[in-house]
Length: 326
Length: 271
Image (tube, rainbow over all chains, first blue to last red; front, side, top):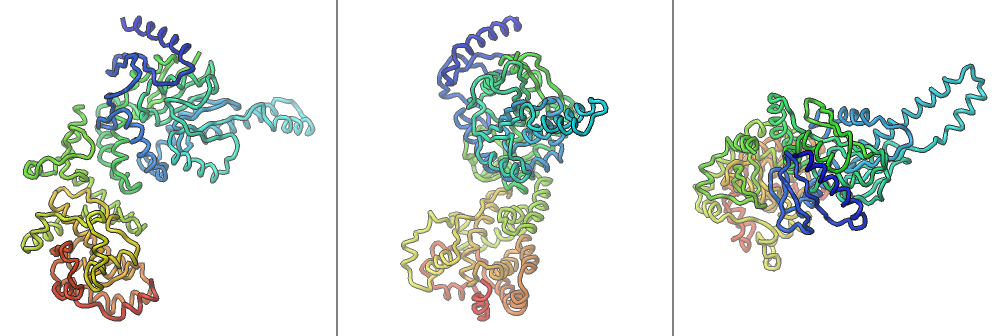
């Protein structure tokens, strides 16, 4: 029963995609899933509709603004707070994302909600290392080369077939500002661009990117399904969608410890380090409001992605969801 | 949802629920029908573990960066429970202080009639206070709101103490440079006994220059401590109704000696 409904919805979705390329207004398609209780009909407006902002209930229009203010306030201390709250583990999570991504040199990445640029910097570093390694392998495969042949190889491949490019897209200008400063400090000048944009309405044409990532950003989006559709639209056929996000912990003991730590320690740290209790209260509450691994997987499938799978990290505290546009 | 409710009750376990029944339900600024133990609009309920962490964390942060006024404020709120109770009782026992506790006046730019105050004669409290605000380029609105005091009345006492701080500068004639601030802190420590004031009074002199430190230890400090111990509680004065009163007269009424003269010569060299 559920499967047939889902295929019916997918057919409807595909026809909607074909028709609605021009108008990017808020068309909500009905998306009833097992876990999610929000079902939206084909209505144009959203008057009177409410959504969650952490454990609070707010009108939908207000959520984006309030999320903006949260990140505007914490932008300068964002990276410091990440290290403090996760005791450095967020770096391992982001490294794991890159390993699962395993990008080849020369690809285009769209790093949505990329903020301070963590994923993009890692992407550029990874592809650079991969490119160097491929170079060395190429050179090694030539048997008994003369030094002239060697230097010729290095010279011709210097430009590279295509340079890997990362586009950092974020709705918040303060976060992008911090990211740009970090890039300057690290001396990264080429291969990265910073774009202000809304994940629900990306300022890019269709079929542009080989990779789409959204790390710790999608739970702040008001309409997650819309962000997923935009991801589908902007990826090339064969492109990969990757989402790194906090998720549900299955082990009850770990869940208790995690909850105690989240609600007791994190707002305190937020107050002391970043000077803002409420923003970090919102952040830990928003994690609880985000759908669990299976539900989110269904949502990704409904957006049109195939071969969707997820990987739990640190006992389910964080999950990486992956899907392909085929 | 159950989990969130459990967590909320865990967080409010040390809030006196009966107090909310007596004072009436406080409304949050955003409309949410979740009760989480909020006793006043800016209140964030915390349990003892969180308070301890906040106290330690804010202490370290304030020491590292003395310009983080929000950390000094948090330190004061999390460590000042006993001292606030004593202050509140002193206010209750004084007729004017009792009126303040009932009427709950707030010193903000929106509640001050600036044109009327600047028309007051020189030497009056209102005129000197305005002059102090202008010269030092400060505003009473920059005081942080009280967040972590789990009692509505004590939270007001803390807020009043913060808002009276600038008036204290005027009463004591101290500028807002480092030396002036330390002198006022010594006075406040002697008067209120708030741990944050005592900490500020002991650690503040570390950042003073040698000459300022000498001045503090020889004349300014002892004067501040003496006056603080002897003076009437500064929170008991309804300043908003005394703008026209002459400043020297008010000082005499409060039992505050005029500052030692040497501060004025020093002010020109250090500020």
